Image (tube, rainbow, N blue to C red; front, side, top):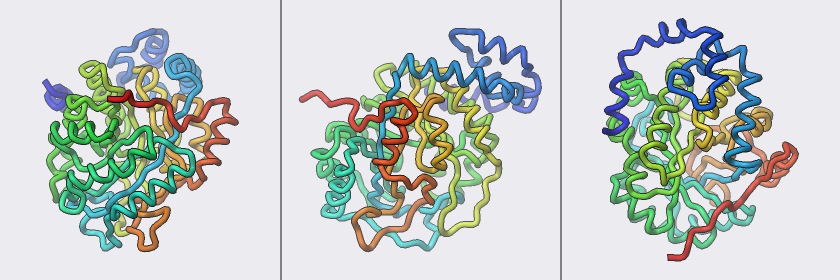
Length: 370
């Protein structure tokens, strides 16, 4: 049974009744338990839990230090291509947007890699739009071969692949996958993905499982916050992460909390506001529900908020980010996917993490020689 099959049992829940039925006593009981149930996780996401953020934060911090130490892994994205055949309403790369498009040449890929490696970073996330014609599997393999000498860890955030395709990239040196479901509510998913292969909800939902089956070392999932009720999305995201942890114990599972950001070519307005307090609550609830999950916060968030989140359970931070294709070294750049909120350099993020009493890490593991 895949997570898609498991999720079918949740689709008919009356979410408003669920939230209304949770009391402060339910939250207190959840906080008193060492191992939390799904019902406890629901309680910590509820409106009733909003007045318990401080005790949640204290416990989340203890659990994070217990399982991860005082360590924050730093990484950065490298956009290889911004061509896309989907028409997602919320994305700057949508095929309907008239933006400057570009796919990096091998020479440009290596130049970007050298520039990033020069900052000290050794964890790299490779991204493309969802257009196989402009960034086919062979192109991804070539990019990985060019960049492997510079980085100890290469992850991908590209169009969903088949299991054997993930195996191919794994053999070439990719060790991680990031794929956002964007929104778990299937009806809302159809509304915001009106055209393109991304309309296939199930194929995207099962991409993390295919990557785990291929042997991927790490898998990072998440919902794009602002497209639907955040409590419901956070709850299902947590269940999805728990499912992956329970079924694929050899894969490190992590969750991101990306909020919608402004971008070129669209006047799309988030359907649901997600405040800083909302973001904190869902992050704390997830840490308490699944203490061994990694938590990633990207440069979509403001510097002052990211600084505060370091002590609340974050395990990975992006640094020195650019969402443009060739954004660091190329003159004719491809337009950005979205506006970055935290524009600090890698060195500035490094110093910030140190000031918080944590150790920023450029390189936290080395693959064994084959």
